[in-house]
Image (cartoon, rainbow, N blue to C red; front, side):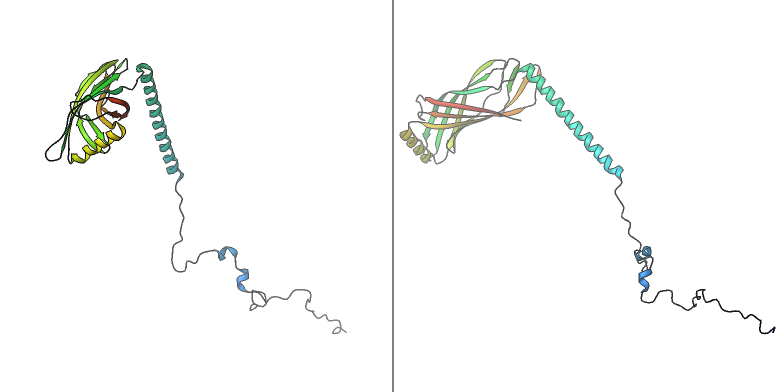
Length: 256
């Protein structure tokens, strides 16, 4: 009876079976790459020993320093422009500058004849009137001036204005002698005669380039140059005859 009541142990069927040490860690039907750590997938391959590239950025301090320098430079330039404008405005209000006026009042032909070698010898005396309408501004006419008279594209004569000082509200009349030598003057003389027969007058162009110094009160400004262009229409060009100027107009321009 004792043998019949002996209890034999029975294995627990509800506990899960233990995995075999040789069982694969990857489930059936899936690849190993499907369960790789995503962080490890994006790591660069450093198997060849190459160092990773680090992208550096320009420091913000350099950029801000450059911007400050540019702002300071623009501010200084703007300030200088404002100061110069104020000074010019004050000078304009004090001196009330006006441009001088020039006119050609007379032209005398002293020589205009052909030589034996067909060159044309010309000589003019030009009466120039210069007016300075300013109350507090004087004009120094410096040396180195050049005056020329042209017919079409041919220069007939040239001369220069002597040095002198023109005071306030002054009118000065100058007689400027001019001379020239034109090669192959036969063709030029024939063209002048034909022009006179067809129209009854001859157009001329007078050009002047004069260096001057302007005096504001007791202050002398640096030397500058001005140019004058005068268009003339005369009735003839012949020696020892009275030349009448039918039209005359001049333009004046300063050049620093």
